[in-house]
Image 1 (cartoon, rainbow, N blue to C red):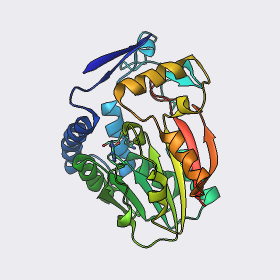
Image 2 (spheres, rainbow, N blue to C red):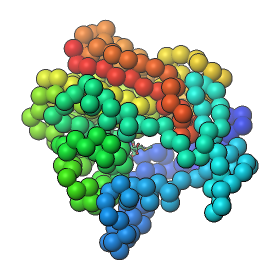
Image 3 (cartoon, rainbow, N blue to C red):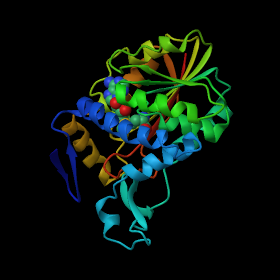
Image 4 (cartoon, rainbow, N blue to C red):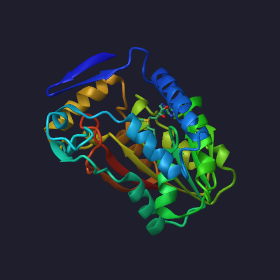
Length: 287
Ligand SMILES: C[S@@+](CC[C@H](N)C(=O)[O-])C[C@H]1O[C@@H](n2cnc3c(N)ncnc32)[C@H](O)[C@@H]1O
């Protein structure tokens, strides 16, 4: 791991690069989780997702120095809001699946929901349990380990229609969704890992159904605003990591060319789960 110093925090970037890192990380996680699934440890996908999250989490530095619950978990966790660091209760979360389920209810109905860069499917399963909408859901993911674990979790989500497919943000192809009329496509912290999306990224997404709605929960706040001191540090981290620099520019360019209409864009409005990588929000509809 190559350390990057951003004041109070040192973050690291893997020597092998992020693409290879996730190939190995999701394969290792898949092997571990499949053993637990095969041992019959879970009644449903909700329980499996929570078990994976508990086993994967590492606590960050400031919270780690404070009081602890019996068993060892810190009572607080490091977070940030609008560019300022803060401590928040350890068992609070940023609420992405609840937000997406709520948007589905207020802005739908959609005839397909697609996550691009879906990892091992955690958001899709959580959205299903939050929304009660049966699907079809689709996950598009770069790594075979992520797709494999997601596919093994799918039978545990009784009543959910879901499938996982090979997908690369650098050549966005959603043809695996088939013929649809009104699609919600979203991403959560995966576009972050593509340095430059390229000018036609949103044009290509919009070509897969007559009506497309996009939601992105991604760390692009520094590209549109400087709400607080951590925002500038985050811009440095992203540049050093080789992470995304052109999300906001590409989205605005798509709007200027009449491809999408931006419904909402807001910088660093979640209690971030990673103080060094705060989430922002954007929503668009095809024009
Ligand atoms: C931080 S994880 C987030 C996974 C998932 N969205 C979540 O919130 O749990 C980043 C994911 O982006 C995927 N990813 C990275 N580059 C990608 C690309 N070019 N195309 C598709 N997925 C990619 C990684 O394989 C990984 O699964």
